[in-house]
Amino acid sequence: MTHTILTGSARTALPGALAIGKADPAERLEVTVLVRRQAAAELKTRVTQMARAGAGPEHLSREEFAARHGAAQADFAAVRKFAAQHDLTVVQQDAARRTIVLSGTVADFDEAFDIQLQQFEHADGTYRGRTGAIHVPSELAGVIEAVLGLDNRPAARPHLRSLNGSAPAAATTFTPSQIARLYDFPTGTGAGQCIAIIELGGGYRPRDLTTYFTQLGITPPAVTAISVDNAHNRPTGAANGPDGEVMLDIEVAGAIAPGAHLAVYFAPNTDAGFLNAITTAIHDAANKPSVVTISWGGPEDSWTAQALNAFDSAFQAAAVMGVTVLAASGDHGATDGVTDGKLHVDFPASSPHVTACGGTHIQAVGTTVLSETVWNDGPHGGAGGGGVSAFFATPAWQNGLSAKSTAGTIAPLQKRGVPDIAGDADPVSGYRVRVDGQGLVIGGTSAVAPLWAGLVALINQSKGRPCGLINPTLYANQAALTDIVHGNNNGFVAVPGWDPCTGLGSPRGNALAAVL
Image 1 (cartoon, rainbow, N blue to C red):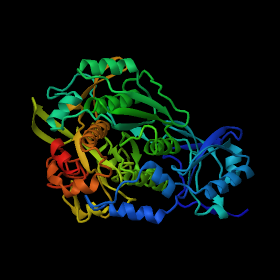
Image 2: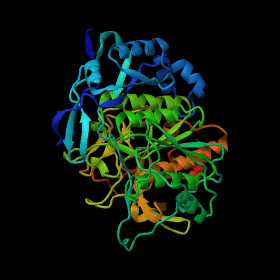
Image 3: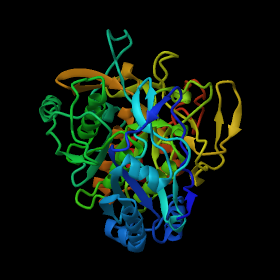
Image 4: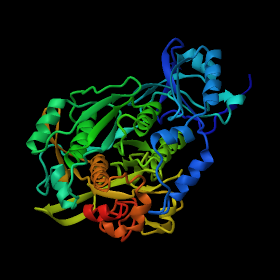
């Protein structure tokens, strides 16, 4: 059997990681194989048409999408045959998601994909990984588009920041409902909508949610935990850890749209787990989310090209089905926390089919915003992520835009610019939430994605139809946002119009409801 390299699958070890030996050949694992979609050219055309604000084709139902653009059964059969030849077991397959999950030992997968899995020791912990490319049988070249899960290094981190210790004298914190009033969100509850929340660790306690919403005078929303790849709602008891992320997402989205159903998809923090959570949510025909909010991510160059393309393909599918996807742009400014002296953007926020959410610092009295600037707490604090992708092409709605660096250089966008929009993210003007039985103030761009998700749910309810991909409309209606023109994110400067600090700006809720 001859093999060929799977395009975009090459991996390198984490910086500073040390290979300490071969992975246990008897260790069992599950691996996600993504096969090509049917009528890919037709889908690309539909997505291109959606780049024109207000002029895109009608959204497809999930059933229509699966029939037109899901996996072909012949391709699944070819992968099953390949699996059987290497003693790999098919755990599940889903045509709409184009996903077939295989189970086997390290030795089986080493042979099947012509790789050598090893154990690596890293400052953040030990992980199973590989270096180099994955190989697939020549007859499956073009059929298999990605193989994820062989490597189980953490794929992403939560984008939240707690207001620790004694609050600065200038700290003024808010409930999510107060932020909604400051941003003039429309009335409504989001009834009839489902907001999907993606989580890669931690969990929530229902009694905390009941207490929190009751104290706000809000009827607690319906919240459902959904297991993906054997992950579950498992609170860790560490309020400043992943539990803080989970509770922040639920409490912000739930306070804005308490009538919406909140479906929380828990998955392992791996590239396969992350993708499977997203595709499960997007194609969930039972809960039918109209909005997906993602508060986890990692530097764009930490992902393989096959993963970047697989995630972006999922987000294109969401757009075609009328599902809005929002993602936090990161909390480490223009470097995204990478220490190589270069600028980096966060993924999945850098996907052009995601609405990337940056951060601001807000000062307000009552229901009046006094000022709003780029969130930047200095070199040792947090700052809103943003910059220019090194991978994704400039989308049509960003053609002609430029970015101004802190050095004063102005350059036209050569690739996708991040973020698209912004909202309050500074912990100093953060959100009052409840996590693991205690009250906390949390900020970060993690708060911005569920804030906007709640707003989109309200608009979907009022219109009686989903907004879908909102980026083209936002860029064509910039007056529906408040332009942020002061501050920087340690790499780029805020300017009139779009910039890589706060995008088009923060929401003017009722104005957005009028144009979306």
